[in-house]
Length: 70
Image (tube, rainbow, N blue to C red; front, side, top):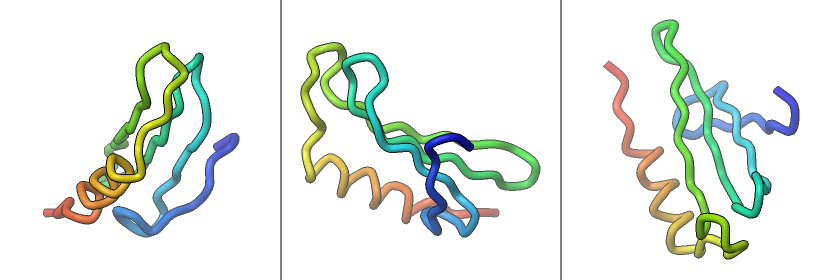
């Protein structure tokens, strides 16, 4: 849980990591459902140091909001 913040997206009890891995800006969301761990990643320009755009982050958040739990 190091460097993770709690989030309610896509489900209460989710965790988010936002930072740099290598030269890549990244936003990763972790959550559990029915004893399974799920991870979703948004990665900026692979190994070029570029940032993902606000539009990309908005799409990523919309994808998380659209997850349906059965």
